[in-house]
Figure 1: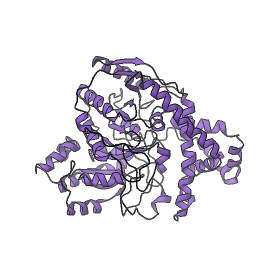
Figure 2: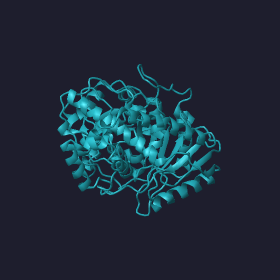
Figure 3: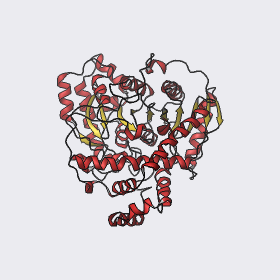
Figure 4: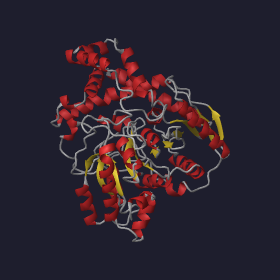
Length: 496
């Protein structure tokens, strides 16, 4: 098998080739490694090569799992691999002791026969919708290397879009699977809260907002991966049972006609790019042509309030992450300046304020549930604009310098506690979500959501659209995704 043939297969069909004896796992790993060597200098999707681990796995045998022999990558955030560090995109964490055991989802990938040969790049602590860690350098989009592949699972998306692997693991705490999928022309499903275990090294990541999953080129790969990953593990705080009917079978069931609500306006009131609106218009027309009822409607939610609630995840989690790193022997000074700035703001946020923001999640969930009582799905753009150029959305250097000086002087925390930085915090929330304001709703409500590559811009850039379902309705999303994939195929549309 050569690379051109390799790229024509998804993970499901590659596994079938291995099972039939037409290709072996060693050959597939060699093709993946060769392709990675070709694109790594330009795209930088992988931050930690694990070829020795993959070779050792092949020596033990890949078994007869549903994806036996297929090469893949995992994300260097939360997805622990025994004997390797989990650096979370950070120089401070890269120097800490390696993981002692596999994350449950990593073990399930290995049990399914997938051959893991590296970890993908991510922004520090997974905090951004772009992938630009100072520790490992930024990743680039295979469709245009001057642009971001999205984040925080940007390395995974870049590797899949570039043809290194047919699917790669990721996680999604605010859009971190769906945003890169939309930027790179791929399928990105954020499963329902509790569908996939995040243990044992983690409990509820980001207060339960984060879900584990994959980024792929085909709906059936995403469905099969969800079958592999789903189901409870001992100690999970929230756990959905595996479905009685596997997701790969659910997606093949003819879909009933759906009622779908749609909205193309930014929930935080920021301008929308014309291409994002065009993506919605064409998606609505496609859905109507398939017989679905599609109507303008949206949940009764204050988008700016939700953005502020989302920002408070950072204020709770980032200081704790820095404290844990220091307790394990790391240095706070090794974290990026913006991360340390957020940590200072978080330490100055009262427990009362954090709790009030967390309690608002219930309000958002009930408002979204009211919409789902009338509509099966909620359709929005995934992004407010095509994939942005590198550096777009970075905090202004002067603002960072002033806030950094206040942090160093000790005044930043005092000003935050006094409420004198509320406007700055609101602006940070707006700035960070201006290009990605649609995805956080599903994280705070625990609902499943999927980004599908249904639009390419006049400049040839991918721009996905997002469907949000009610809690537990992952199968319905996959059913619709399969129907749309058949109606408007995208698998063969790949970057050069």
